[in-house]
Length: 421
Ligand code: HEC
Ligand code: HEC
Ligand code: HEC
Ligand code: HEC
Ligand code: HEC
Ligand code: HEC
Ligand code: HEC
Ligand code: HEC
Ligand code: HEC
Image 1 (cartoon, protein in one colour):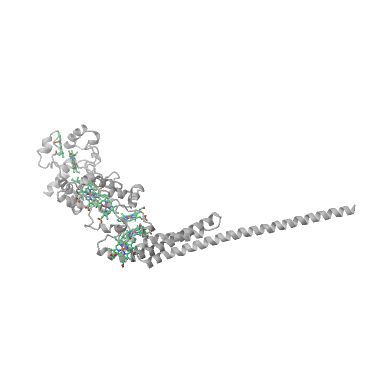
Image 2 (image 1 turned 180 degrees about the vertical axis):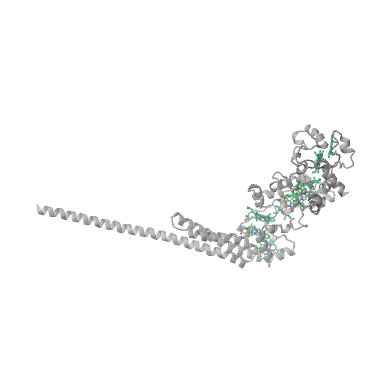
């Protein structure tokens, strides 16, 4: 049976990218002409990766693509014709090729064939098996009659386009009524550091929905490891946190690692204020204060003293530069202190005062050096200015003396000539 299916596919493959010699296409293109431009089903059909690879309508829908001008022979009377596709039929239809490694390897050596099995593991797939037809199926994410290669920038699943593709359903209160109460994932995401980085700054290192939820897994938190997804990109924060005493507590109680302080969709740029008690991140879980409050204050104070000292050093170095002093050396110290501050903000995730102090120490030393260096430059400037004033006083005095001397010489010369007369 498999062989017949395969043979059928291979013989029905036609020449690449041409206007297809296809009874189905011909008749349906005519039907399309009577529609408004927006409603035409096949307006993007020739760009479809399947058409590009030589497939036709019947490769997905079945039927006889040679039965020109004969609806009945092409569709209704043909046993292979699948008819209207339910969402479940559709997944099976896409999967008959995409789950077949022998078949797919004829087209590409690198293509994966796990989309269907992944899909059944996702919430979408699980719900579909239960008869919920509102979930995403293959064509909801990839489109239909215009499916593009995933690396094509116009593909619905290209990095920049994924959030919009998911939001078609997930942002609609109507569509999600009775299924999911929350429909703010997209709005939260576009306002997050990640959404701004990906969509505004075109930084493809930042995650789109599928980078956290999986392409086909779209797994709910209970399945898979979405609770630990952040560490796959933020490895330093993860490693520090996993060594901290909070890690065991969080693990034992099933509290997610990063989300509990940062959120999942509306992740904002953190600041040292996260460690302040009022308006900070600790108070939500520790309203009583106690040891957590003490630790938060200790961590805050270390960062705050580094930050304050670095700011003062920056100001003083700037003043010295404006006065034209040679301060290029001091910039190295400032940079070192700045790097230590960045490093320390990551080191917060040890949730250990001594560890954070160790991370901050090079910065405290370097900013103290810069501060002292800038102060010395400014002192030197003052000294030179005072010196210059002293020197010019002496010069003026000497000039006055010289002038008086010349006057004296001249007047005594005049007296002498008078005498001679
Ligand atoms: C001579 C014209 C003609 C040909 C040839 C033709 N179709 Fe159709 N097809 C139609 C018409 C008309 C309808 C609309 C039927 C309706 O609205 O009830 C239709 C409906 C469909 C549908 C919608 C689902 C359904 O069953 O109602 C699919 C899918 C489809 N055709 C696929 C194909 C495929 C695949 C081929 C080639 C193997 C093909 N058609 C050949 C005229 C044609
Ligand atoms: C890669 C597989 C694939 C190919 C190739 C393909 N289709 Fe489809 N088609 C689908 C899927 C999946 C659906 C159902 C998606 C939906 O609208 O829910 C569909 C839906 C349809 C429908 C019903 C659309 C509607 O909105 O009522 C028609 C008619 C149709 N196809 C005809 C064709 C014709 C004619 C061709 C060739 C010109 C073709 N299809 C090629 C996958 C394919
Ligand atoms: C919830 C949305 C979604 C659904 C449902 C979905 N896909 Fe995908 N698919 C994606 C995303 C996102 C990618 C990855 C794009 C990228 O690589 O950047 C992808 C990639 C692919 C690829 C490229 C190879 C690969 O695995 O990366 C194929 C082939 C594919 N999907 C087929 C399918 C098939 C077949 C189904 C149905 C069984 C399906 N997809 C269902 C979103 C979806
Ligand atoms: C007749 C077999 C067949 C059917 C049915 C089929 N595909 Fe494909 N599909 C292929 C082949 C072959 C490729 C090209 C793989 C390649 O060259 O990388 C492909 C490519 C793709 C790609 C691009 C993958 C990439 O690497 O970028 C996507 C997405 C895709 N198909 C989705 C679907 C969806 C969704 C359906 C069902 C609506 C479907 N396919 C039905 C055979 C099929
Ligand atoms: C066709 C509409 C549709 C599209 C498109 C869609 N989804 Fe869904 N999704 C749903 C529905 C409906 C559910 C609710 C299932 C249920 O009843 O719990 C769901 C459930 C989910 C869940 C599980 C939520 C939970 O905890 O119960 C996640 C995660 C998810 N979708 C992510 C995505 C991502 C990521 C994308 C885009 C790559 C996407 N979805 C695209 C319709 C869609
Ligand atoms: C940085 C990773 C990340 C990104 C990006 C992301 N999510 Fe999530 N998402 C999560 C986590 C973690 C959860 C689990 C929440 C929990 O613990 O229950 C979640 C939960 C969900 C849920 C379940 C309902 C809810 O809100 O708790 C849906 C639906 C969902 N995400 C859809 C999306 C969509 C759509 C996008 C893109 C617009 C997206 N997610 C982007 C990490 C992410
Ligand atoms: C696919 C990789 C990836 C994943 C997964 C990811 N992030 Fe990010 N994250 C980034 C990138 C890249 C940036 C930098 C964005 C920018 O340029 O501002 C970033 C920025 C951040 C920032 C802001 C850092 C700063 O100093 O401004 C925080 C906080 C953050 N992510 C937390 C998380 C959390 C929490 C999760 C999990 C729910 C997560 N990230 C998942 C890649 C990722
Ligand atoms: C108990 C609360 C808490 C947990 C849990 C937590 N963070 Fe943080 N995170 C903070 C605080 C507080 C800051 C602010 C540090 C600052 O700027 O002073 C921060 C800052 C950050 C930053 C920006 C600074 C940097 O390192 O570049 C990133 C990124 C980040 N966290 C990622 C994560 C990730 C990933 C996880 C999970 C492994 C995580 N966080 C877990 C409290 C937490
Ligand atoms: C998501 C909730 C949550 C957040 C947010 C959180 N913690 Fe905790 N933390 C806990 C839980 C649960 C315990 C276990 C002890 C308890 O029940 O109070 C704990 C215990 C601690 C302990 C040990 C207390 C003791 O008596 O030995 C310290 C210290 C601590 N947290 C500090 C912090 C700091 C600092 C922050 C903010 C940066 C923070 N926590 C944020 C949930 C949280």
